[in-house]
Image (cartoon, rainbow, N blue to C red; front, side, top):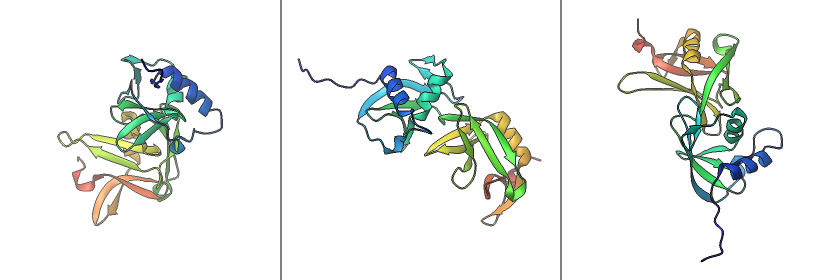
Amino acid sequence: MSEQMSVKPSTESLTAAARAASKGKGLPPVHLWNPPFCGDLDMRIARDGTWFYQGTPIGRPELVRLFSTILRKDDDKYFLVTPVEKVGITVDDAPFVAVDFEVEGTGRDQVLSFTTNVGDYTKAGPQAPIRVERNAETGEPSPYVLVRANLEALIDRKSFYRLIDLGTHHEVEGQSWFGLWSGGEFFPVIPSDELPD
């Protein structure tokens, strides 16, 4: 039998490494780390932002926040990354949910600042765009805002309804769109002629 040890992903090792990496100010520099891939962990982020481990919701918000700081998206896959290990996790939609926002200014000078379910804060603008996907069958919109490095937050329903009240019409590439201004950028939501009466 070989004496060689293989790293087996576990929440304990990830928690310890994440705590060590989070000692400094700000978020850990996960984009700079290139550890070996250690396999997939039975961890899932549901569409409503709930984190599950082995099918059970993680009930400690501080643990969810800690894991969220070492989350990275490479191509279309999500990983928890520390200096020594990289494990795959499942994300049903977006990894975060924008649960509230504040608005400053009006019109083109308007700035929308979002807060996520894990305590991230982002100002929508050229570096943090808002985008809306529409379900091909139902037309139902799913709005997102970029939080950090390829990681988006699904904007929750109550916030989206509030955003719609702030919407306006603007011409984009010769077509009138209903959308939102933030940080000097216009973000189209729906073509003006498709708005319900």
